[in-house]
Amino acid sequence: MISYEKALSIVLEQARRISATETCALTDACGRVLAEDVAAPRDIPPFDRVAVDGYACRGQDIGGELEIIGVLPAGHEPVGSVSAGKCIKVMTGAILPAGADRVFMVEDARETPDGRRVRFTGDERAARRGNYAARGEDRKKGAVVLQKGTRIETRHLTILASLGAARVPVMTRPLVGILATGDELVEPGIEPLPHQIVNANAYQTAAQLRDCGVLSRYFGIVKDDREGLVRAIGEARDACDLIILSGGVSAGDFDFVPQAFAANGYVTRFDRVAIKPGKPTTFAVAGERALFGLPGNPVSVFITFELLVRPFLSALLGSPFTPRILPLPLGEETRRADAERDTMVLVRLAEGRVFPLPNNGSGDYTTLAVADGMIRLPAGSPQLVKGTLVDVRSF
Ligand code: AMP
Ligand code: MG
View (spheres, rainbow, N blue to C red):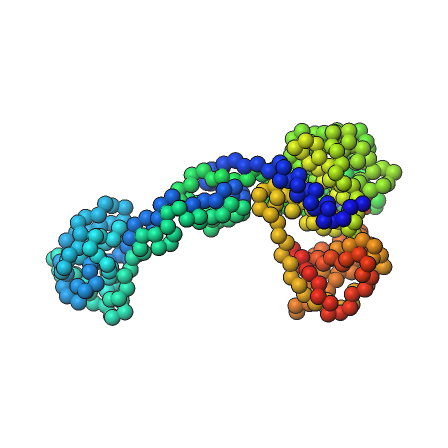
């Protein structure tokens, strides 16, 4: 049996070894992880950019009537320069004409009926506004605007598009195969017989994987039968970079999963971790491919995914996973019978305090509905008094 920290270092090392990059179209970049720093290819904005529809002139000329010597829409080359007593009518987004250091808004202006002259009619404050963005004021050419490791969201896409990135360097997303094992399992929507259980893990894992920004494929329920398991794992191995399988990794008479891993060329890196729940968690590798065998209880699968699979996938995607930790006081005394392993306990947060959720052994799962996070009770601490500060790992 190895410690959680040792298990984590083994999976992270494997992730770093097989991490890869590629490029994707800008339109496909949302949800991907940026593989390189992205720098501004030119100043932002690239020229002194007019911010209102109005008249560009010299600040000291604003009081008098000005001659309009040209009209400049956005996207057009400059038309002449502004000198004393003159102005150019400009539109939002146009380049500020040479000689001008002020733009007054059409709302603060009155043109002569022939449209050849204009007078500023606004107040003193409006007269002082430049109403243009200076070249490079947002960022200078060459400055890093987006950092490697950024998970690309809508707002990052805005920037990538503005910088002209038609293709985006991103981390390669692994395809993750999901398998649920157990003779007792039926899919949601099928009426379970009294001795049957509805498969929750496959759906839970698929949702967690989606949240991690990776691709997944579900291979269905596999019976607790050696040949069937060998075949199903082989099929998933051929199609996927990673397999996440639940159930069958314990020491039961029909737990054939470890044998089926070995039959498919996987070498076990660990198969016992000193955490509760999650002791029989298994990690195995076959060349560039990896596999997690998680114990069958949905809460165990949930927790071991958060503790080991999520950090593995984050590392694979080039952005180290840092859990959100909130140090908060326990709202009530917490006891447990078995304090031999580090224990992960689901908790609810209320009024800034932490309330461990009851769990009779590791099979109950309905408290997941109200769990805000989990805490780790270190081995050898059977009792924690109310008020003890604990680190809550929030979901
Ligand atoms: P196992 O790890 O196969 O011994 O399973 C441990 C417990 O988890 C058993 O009570 C199983 O019925 C339950 N279990 C296993 N797989 C699933 C699943 N996919 N969905 C819900 N419960 C499961
Ligand atoms: Mg089973």
